[in-house]
Each structure stands twice: as C-alpha cells, then as structure tokens.
Length: 432
Image (cartoon, rainbow, N blue to C red; front, top):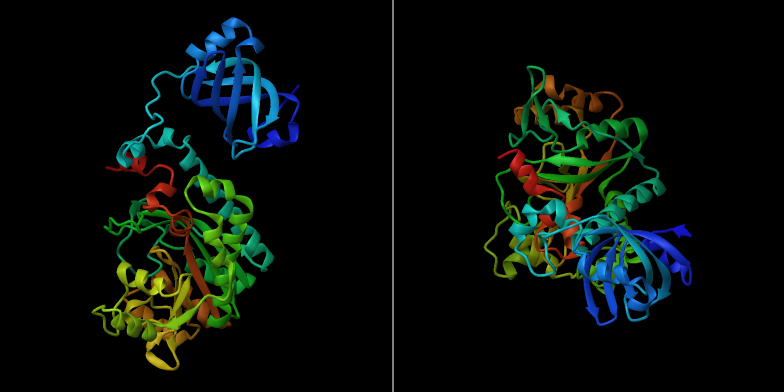
C-alpha cells in the first residue's frame, strides 16, 4: 500500500492508499459519515460507511474526530464528479495522531481582527492556503521568467549603512555600536551587479517606516528589482509588461483552482496577458484627470483616487511615463524633451489597485549623479561607491521594482494587502 498526498489522488483511482490528513469539517447521515479532509497539498472528501469499518471505528469517526484532528486514513481513491476537485477517498480505516479540542476558528464568519490574532492557525483555512500557494507560484514564475531572459539572481543586503533613496523613514538598529538600517530596496546594489553581470534581479524583503495605514501600505514586503545594463526605457517597458503577462498566464495555467478559491475568475485575468499595455505621459494623465473633474495641476503626485481613475480608463495595466523630477528619486535622468521631468514610468494595475511597478532609466552621468547626491544631502562616505559606478565605464542602464504583495492583492482581489503576508499581528506583538 502506497502513502500519497491528496494532490496525487488522480493517479491512484481504484487503489487503496494511505494519507496523513487533518479534519476541516464533518457531517453524518445515519450509516454514513462525510469527512472534509486536508493535507497541505489540497482538500477533498472522505466517506466512511458503517458497514465498511468496525463499529468502534465508525463511533470514533462520529465522536472523536473534531476539527483539526490529525490522523492517518486508509482507503480507496474514487472519482467524484460532483466535487470541483474530482476525487474522494472511501475510508476503510484511520488512526488518530493528534487530538484537537475546541479549535478557535470555526466554519463560520470571523472578523479580520480575530483572524489576524490567530494567524498561525488561520493559515490552515482554504483562503490563506490558496493565497500562499499563489504567492509561491509567483515567486517560482519570477525566477523562470528572468532565467529565460538572461538575468542572474543577485542578493542585496538587508542591513545597510544608509537609505537607498535618501529618506529618513528607516528602521534603525544597533550594529556593534554603529547605526544600521533595514533595507528599503536592493536597487542600488543591483546596479553594481548589472555593471558586472549585465542583467540581474533581486528578490527579497524590504522595509518602510512610513506611518501609513492604508490598504496599499506595509512596513515589510517583498520586492522584485531587476537592473539591466545597456538598456533604455522603451526596452525596459517591454520587459516589464512581458513579466507581468508571464506571471498572469502562469497563474492561469497552474493555479486556476486556488484563484477560484479566493474569488478571482480565470477569464477576468486573460485580458491582462494581452500586450502591449497602454502608455500615456504624465502630462496626458494630468489632462485626463482634469477632464475627469480632479483638481490637479502639473507637479502633483498621484494618490489612490487619481491612480484608480486613470487605470479605469483602460481596463488593463497602463504605463504613466516621465514624471516631474521633484517627486522622483535622485538617480533618474532628465527627460531630454522637458528638463522638468525625468525618464521613468509607473505601471498602474486596473480594478483600483494602483501602482504595481515603478521604474526608470538610471542616470549614468558622473557629474549629474555627484551633484544630485550633494543636493539631496547624501554623503560621499555613504554613497561614494554608487558614484564610482558612473566613474568607471558608465553605460546607459534601466531598472524597475515590483511589490510582490501589491501584485498579489490585485491578482487575488484582496480588500487589504495584509491578507497576503503570514504574521503581521505576531510582528506587532513582538514590537509593540
């Protein structure tokens, strides 16, 4: 008899197998008990008929199996055309491994605060399970995409001596009697990597100490940040849209069941695989907003209402090109057609989820970057190495960053991006 997982059930129809499971729910009707089972790879139904097991086993199934009890189950895999999964197990025997009494998360509605206080257990439920599977798949697809496009994965440090963009909104820690900070971005380090390896990307956690409490802000989140040597914005935009379309198609191909579990239809995602994505300039966006009744002028940064309105005009991701330099980072080069602007782009997601990618060309002019560092009060001691990238064989290069949680919130239609991360409340308890 083979030990299998629920996800392997389709390969063992008609066979007697053994599976380690937890009970998520049950109901009984006379001489038959229906058990809802999970094992980490999936969910399906187990059926126990009174005539198929010893009487004490049937009584145990009715009285000793409670929600989240763990046990080994032995039975025959059968097709179940009534279920979306398509298979079930006809149980011949089971052995309890771990009892579970008064499990706090019942099969009913709970408030989000209660669920986050019990996040370590809520992960077992269907929706968080599906979200974690989708998240894992996006990370795998990210590595596949960049491997196919000639990128090398490049790890940036998480503890840094200064801010990547000169901001003071950092988490500070004592580092052997010196100040160190949790990194906001791997970008500047990735630029050094691109000068050595051509095309690189970083993927890891980043931290922002902004005192923000909105559906779009997290203190800790994951960023995917590619940097590309010998590349201008037009080619970078093509890489960006190809990357997003690749992720969406990969989820359609591999996570249709999980997407359905979180309320996202595969059909609604298909338009996002169609390229190219629309492109408008910042100036055109301002005009569009003014016509839409927004009180905005040139120089304004866009908030959630403006981004939502602009994206709604296209019903698919849209690039906004070349923002005013005052609202963008110091390393972005001036737009040769308008010195008030820099060569950059934000990719806005439809359906009200805002910016999912921010990118730009990186200035490769030594004097320009040196002056910008001085203008922004960034010391030569902290940023001299970044200046060196322009001093020794500088070249045109571009890069972008995608927030993983923001992307996942859009793809899975979540009301709040905190549902995509494992333990936000636990972090709050550790750091009140």
